[in-house]
Amino acid sequence: MKYQGSCHCGAIAFDLDGDAGKVDEAIDCNCSMCRRKGALLAAFPREALTLTTPETEMGTYTFNKHHIQHHFCPKCGVAPFSEAENPKTGARMMMVNLRCLPEVDLSAVKVTHFDGASY
Ligand SMILES: [Zn+2]
Image 1 (cartoon, rainbow, N blue to C red):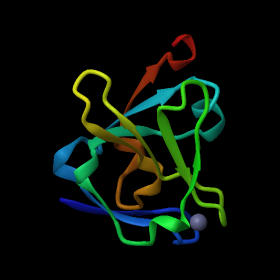
Image 2 (image 1 turned 90 degrees about the horizontal axis):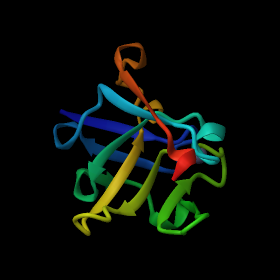
Image 3 (image 1 turned 90 degrees about the vertical axis):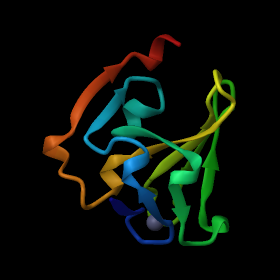
């Protein structure tokens, strides 16, 4: 199934191939970034996500080892996804914030707590 995701104002919008990952399971990470953002993250291959708005609309934030690009909307401040390389396979990955997919029933998402703060 295809999902449509976006930031709040719509400056960042994308299609997501839901079959390439899981939209009913998410990670709630306690690292210094995620605990502030409150995102529910699900991993997808880079190809599963198709941006339907110009890449130039995105702000990008990096910290710590700077190998994850945390994208956000400079207008409304919402952060729909982050991009990184899978250290094991070298493949490009997207960590999609399931809260930015309006079709996903958040109450049905199985949330796993991840201790990102210890890494
Ligand atoms: Zn926005």
